[in-house]
Length: 145
Image (cartoon, rainbow, N blue to C red; front, side, top):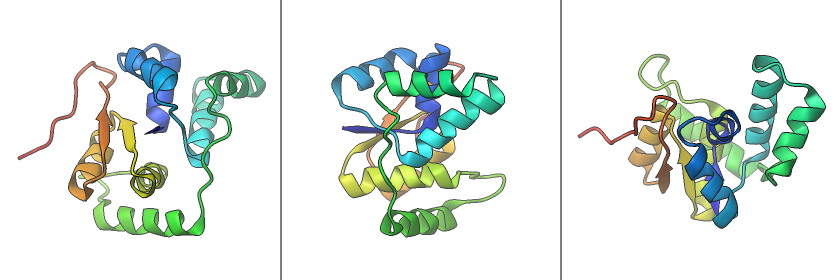
């Protein structure tokens, strides 16, 4: 199984460069979102992309992602500590939702699929297994030395 961050799902729905790889992950590896990731995707589709609420929910459901992985207090606390260790307003503006996805991946010993360079930096530093997806421009993150 692979944990997807919200960007991966949005990239797939928008037909961005990561779409092909996300489609493969959805078809082969039983990919999943956290419950918070589901919320992020729906928020983006409705609030930013202007989608109808029911249509957005149907889009996520058709991908088999609407029942996100529940986040318990252990994961929540770990995600809070992870963000506290790495967050910086300009150098590493990693979101709490992304830290939740990273901690779910870590706790389940699964990879996290994302193209978010800040999240990838955090995962790299923390030893969390990653599936590096291309960004909107088609470029891929590489670790800094």
